[in-house]
Length: 68
Image (cartoon, rainbow, N blue to C red; front, side):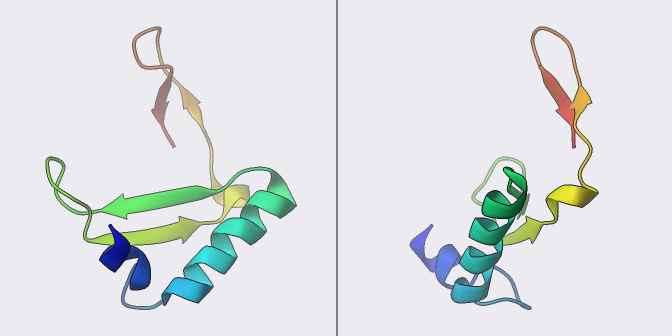
């Protein structure tokens, strides 16, 4: 996980990624990170997503959030 945070994705280094996550959290109160990789293994890439572009879809009682 430390290696992944050092280089979260091909287009963004650690400092810019963390800067985006913190800025989005401070500005909007939310910060979303997309995990890219196999479903049953560790992630290969991380992307900081813009909170103003996210829509939370409510699920059911066993899965309160269906999708983003």
